[in-house]
Amino acid sequence: MFKAELGALILRVTLGIIFFIHGLVKFQGGIENTVGWFESIGLPGFMAYAVAGIELAGGLALIIGLGTRVVSVLIALIMIGATLKVKLSLGLLGNGQMAGYELDLAFLAMAVYLAINGSKLYSVGQMIVNKDTNSFTKAF
Image (tube, rainbow, N blue to C red; front, side, top):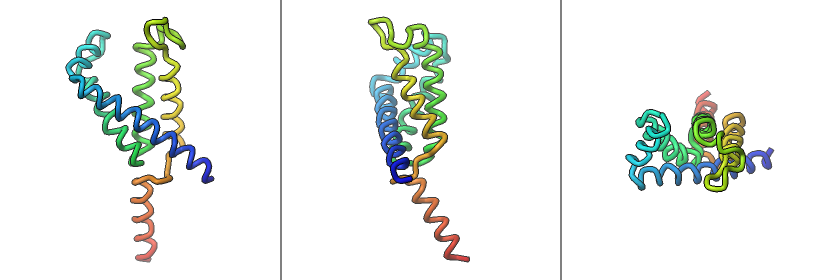
């Protein structure tokens, strides 16, 4: 059991760091650039704010272990959208100028694993649940 939790912790923190940085870069580079790119590929510009926000806040939430399953579902949806809308036509390995969807697929797999299994080890969410559970148990 500990090995599975340790593996989930590694996936959760790694995915969290990667998505936190992706979201941060979108805001630091000027979110308007991302809005423009979204519009250029036929997506509503406001979705850039939603995606960048989920990446930034969701990445941080994953790092600390808060709402892991919900955030992982959102990241999985982002990865599905990115793969279908942008990367699928490039193929698995890309076209030599742009990367394909192999990394997106790996992120999707990580997110789906965490959405299904969660990650309790060193998780703020688990500390909150345990604290409440222990308080409830002590009260009765």
